[in-house]
Length: 146
Image (cartoon, rainbow, N blue to C red):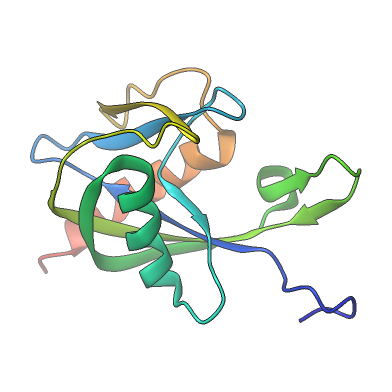
């Protein structure tokens, strides 16, 4: 915890690819940008468990974690300014996940749409940091079965 007694902001997200190599993206309701599914890590929860939970909550899909892709904390990509004017740098942990079940259903309070896109044909507008994350996940995919 920081000196104010609040936990440092941390989130987990999931790069989910279908059999055609397309990535699952959500259109966020809050900022109308495309992103990979994910959200805050809750108290007493692992980052991997948070990624799995967030995917289920936001999309209705069930996934399992395959591997860690990366940890992101670039202030230009992970800074969030809150309504009170406070800016925090989020640490975001990206996992590649495999689809294991569920039914696609956007969570109406947070997600407007769910779509699958080729990594070289990402929609606009997309959160800039998430473009980097999708590319990082794609670059490491060939290592899964070696």
